[in-house]
Image (cartoon, rainbow, N blue to C red; front, side):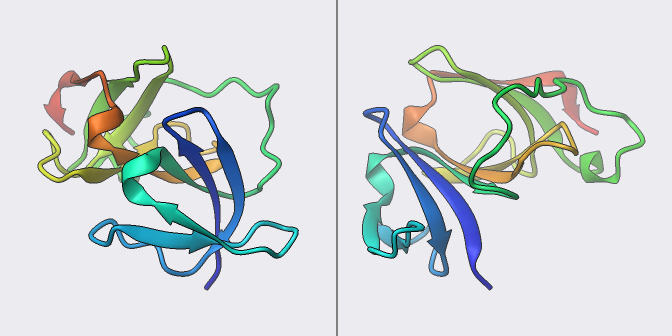
Length: 136
């Protein structure tokens, strides 16, 4: 299955397209943008890789930053705040806190988010802290 992805690089560059071969344990994967020219993406160059519902997204939408305790996605997860050096703050759920690998997944707390899940480069995070005292 093709994944719709948005690769956000450490230098601010953005690459949108589809990918079949994302593996956080491998050094690189490939993204095929809508123009059809496949590009190799090196994991170490990324801030984060967003798995999305739509490549267009909705820039006017404001995401929720709190999780409904009844949301089944929260079971066994830890709500976290990620702060990046560029000032971006991401609120999400992770299954492993603190993350113990170079790349880790975060699921947005907003179930209506365009982002399905986000693969975060641990070295690109300035600060990560749990919200609400640990696993739910």
